[in-house]
Length: 77
Image 1 (cartoon, rainbow, N blue to C red):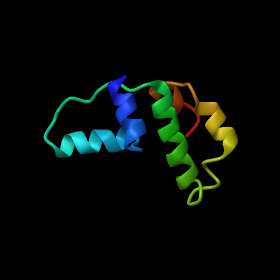
Image 2: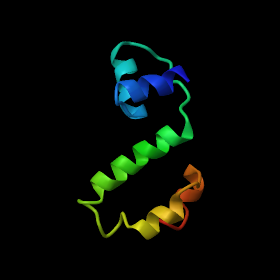
Image 3: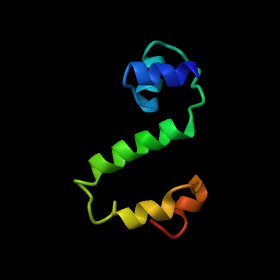
């Protein structure tokens, strides 16, 4: 819960938080709430969609949401 609070208060994504930790020499990467990770994916997806609109479609996103790494790469890419 402390990590989620820090993300909210400092307006950080999980990726930004981990990057800060690694820059400070820390080697531990905490677990994050799924909602925080989903919010970061949404931000990245929306930004990158302007460069790859033919790939990053809403339909494609619906196909991969909730699937694990192995299932995501099978047959979709």
